[in-house]
Length: 67
Image (cartoon, rainbow, N blue to C red):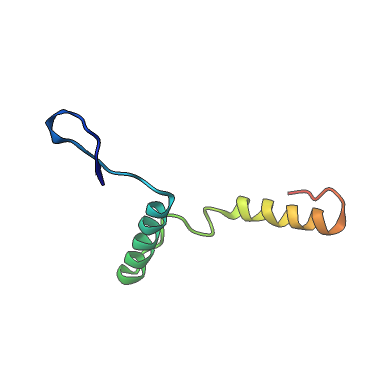
């Protein structure tokens, strides 16, 4: 946090990429403790994972991989 020199003694909170990970970790730990499903889960990312695996397959074989 730092003072941005604005009137009324306002402070600015600097957001970093690391802050996003802290939020994800906090949410994950809370889900474990409360026995809840995480908002971001494998089911939600199924197509993303399939696409990534197809990319790896294409790189290995040198051919087009279909998703």
